[in-house]
View 1 (cartoon, rainbow, N blue to C red):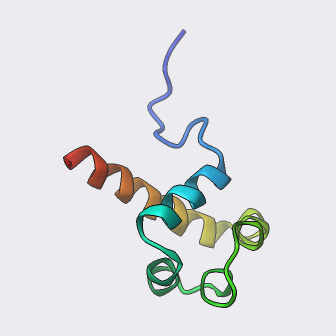
View 2 (cartoon, rainbow, N blue to C red):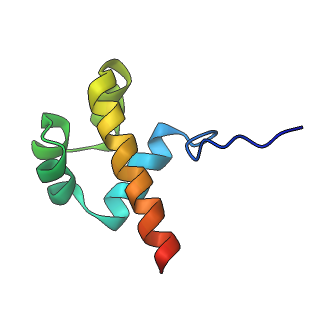
View 3 (cartoon, one colour):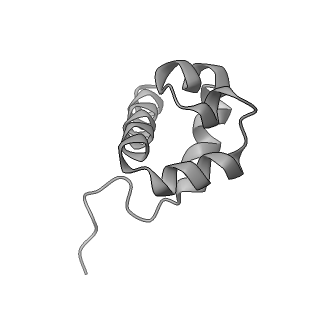
Length: 75
């Protein structure tokens, strides 16, 4: 049995959003990825709804999460 090389393998989108919000906060996320679900009354539920239906935004959020993992690894 091989382990996946993809760091996102098995990580739920809700977990990604929760960790990003805990580390960066909604304001930073809204400034980094300019999408309404991060800037106007942000919630995890509204973000999940939007990101599941918008591939380009999900890709940007996943990239932000990968950067977060790299920052945590350096600490």
